[in-house]
Length: 574
Image 1 (cartoon, rainbow, N blue to C red):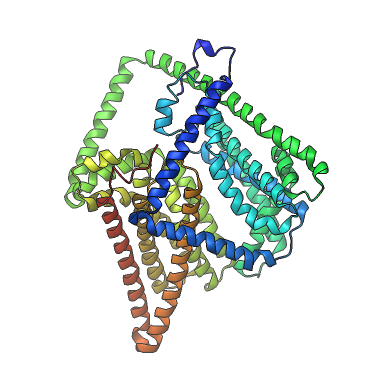
Image 2 (image 1 turned 180 degrees about the horizontal axis):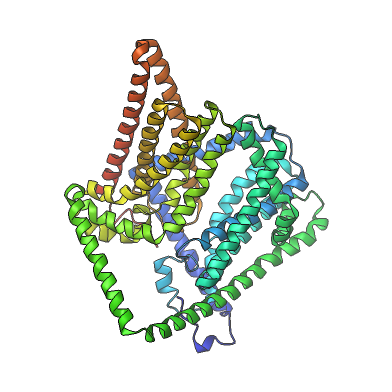
């Protein structure tokens, strides 16, 4: 996939129209097969719960719009237009930073089957790029439907809103592909410079948001007021001149989406919108060719440097490898007594963690700093619970995506994992142990700093430290159980993935809300039924015991899902 194009490609970039029509026919046939397979799967007993939840989500979403969103006052069209264009730029900046700090970047996000059959075929890279963009249409249309429902009360022409939102989201996906290919073509020195630049850009955006929040919020205001003004500050940052300067490609689509003028007056913006999409595809093809050339040059330089290596350096490298192997053998012998056959899986996870340690550290620094923001007020009541609440929020919503080092990354290795002589429970422990331990370290450090500043008491520290630790176990176990029950590819797009993300988010929010309600009910029950001298101990002990029992049930559910995982039925098509 990353080799230079052959001599026949020199002077020619695009395949013929007949080739594209054949690829469209192939894509249509695959879509028909996937649709039939999707119908069979959603009607099967194994998928009936997911089908019911998806239908329930759409019903509640439409009812929420009818009963709530349709009653609100229309938004200002000028601000809505700036938000549509500037918000896309902010997301593009976020994706660029994530790509720069990732160890590996997907090549056009093609599946292994597509890489085998299309990557090895006599097709230009431009055709593969266009094919990849065509695969985004379904997912983009699904997102467009949701966003159009939300914004339909603000505009007159719903069809223009849908068209503008669709073009904006599609352009965002194309820009995302451009960023990925551009980052893949950078060498180590250029990557370091780009990473430093990305950090400076994030600092500048963060300072703008913080400055706007402080200017609009009194110092003695409650935390929820800071959070509310923070969302307004992000919107104001998206509307600023600097962000809008980068949003020029999205401006025509935003005008189409928010224009209430006649069709004749909107025609110039429609024309510009129709031109931006093909121009962005041409830009993607050009960046892709540049990235392939840069990768080829880097590989040639690496090959020349290997030829100039001295034998002493090679012997030193062999000695280092031998030393590392001895250390690993000693450690394995010391710990395998209690880790059983889960230990080799943990060693495999540790190798991946060492490789991605920079990305993992960066993913947890920002949430920790946000959790510590309430400490600046110096109180001991609300600020402690805001810190704990933020920590629970980040544990459930941000830790699983940041530590995707478990079953969720091993879809293509399921056959190998199933063939290993490892008991199901040991396999689950080996896959989940290190991500959970990293989350525990994040929680412990965050709570330790908060305890040193606020001094809430030993009972509060012990209660929330152990409960949040159980929450981490429950979160990773539930994420992996859900993945094993309904597996998907890492970069899969479409309506099913969008519904999955929405339902997962709502499910996690429901778990947090339900946990708070049960904790409050348990506190009231202890206060009414138990003597005053043992109320605190009963409340703390009961809450900790209950959360760890739920976490243990989640681990058992993950083990059951792994035991019943069927390679012939559960693996999604490539």
